[in-house]
Image (tube, rainbow, N blue to C red; front, side, top):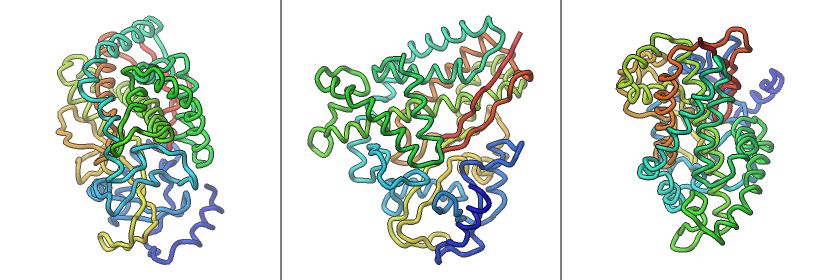
Length: 406
């Protein structure tokens, strides 16, 4: 947004928004030049003691500034709807199943997703995930250098998802491109077009699964029962589109931020190499330290919280960064401590909309640490190649991560 656009928006602040709560903060581009992406969120949160701020960007929206309020908003579906769950909203969005449903409709559409990614299912695929991680690392290690994002992060979790969905691994790049467009393009129409592309790709696939169902994730979708009846074709397409976008983006982005940290912090890396028993705790801490997702909620009725008046239809951004990195919840939030007690995070959402793929994502991160550090214990960011740049969006990511080792 240009300064002229920001000024124009500032003139149109709703009457119920007090001037002292207005900020021009950009949730999708939070960092100043040269500033770390996550440090920018900590700075922003520390800049005010107000529980909510209003930004004129992306059509105008509130930002929940405190971790405790963020969790309460996630939990309170009666006051805050998930129907418009991203900013800026689209006038006629592609349906996305459980992701954009409130109770009581949400439960049935969530049930078959949870069953398809249950702890039992995750345990069953772990040997294949580990074998894939080992194969990737074995191919990368002798080279002495790689782009971790292109060579590993964009391969492992995406391949795992495509296998679970029984989709061609050869289509990984095509589908991942649409998923990235949907989660990072600031233009809502471009995001919606990407979701339509995924929907169009899936339509004939779901028709085949209805005719010849298997045990894969998409077969579970077309066989689902919702509200006491078989799921409709349109509902199945929405659920499958949501599942595909989520399965092709979040974990890949998390892996990039994690490995950039380890490449830049040899002491932390060496501790994991010397004592792999630290890895389970490290997984929780790294997931806490590198939140990536920004969702939003729509206010369902006029209400007041913490002295701030909201009107029905207002949108509230609930960035996972402002829970995971809230110093009132996790002191010294930017510090990484392998022995920190991590009780809860918003990295995979919270409440009824917590991502059903979270257990799989945690295991993919753990197996990445175990496999990579065993084969490549010492590595660094390659200073001779273009540095990684954080790209904001509904799911933040790194565009590249050049690494080297001896």
